[in-house]
Picture 1 (cartoon, rainbow, N blue to C red):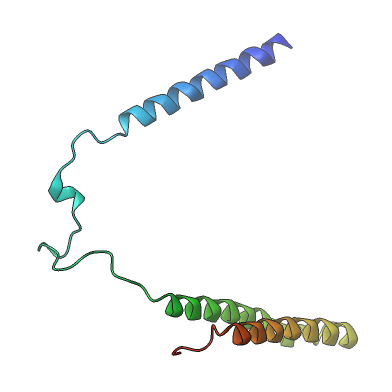
Picture 2: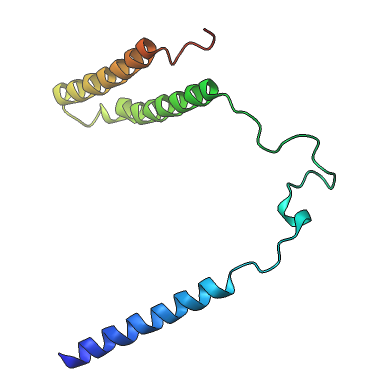
Amino acid sequence: MWMSYLIAFIIMSLSTIVMTLASSLSKKSINDREKNSPFECGFDPKSSARLPFSLRFFLIAVIFLIFDVEIALLLPVIIIMQWSNLFSWSIVSMFFLMILLVGLFHEWNQGALEWAN
């Protein structure tokens, strides 16, 4: 019993020492203006590195990725139809398609699919 406590204490001590050493050695001590500035092909940047990003484009891209993955999940259902029960296959397929359609209808009602106002 005491042996397991001793091993646990040694492991905790070693991990604390390693974490302390890693955090103290990883700190940057020299702050250079050139190293902290954005790099643009060896030239000074002409504009800010933080450009505004269209949130509408991001939402369209995320919706596309979600529906693309769901379509990729839907394609093997056709192949599985040969080896499964037709009734259970149709129930599962219709349920999956209903989830897709409800999600699409929800995004449409929220206005996320309209590119321009």
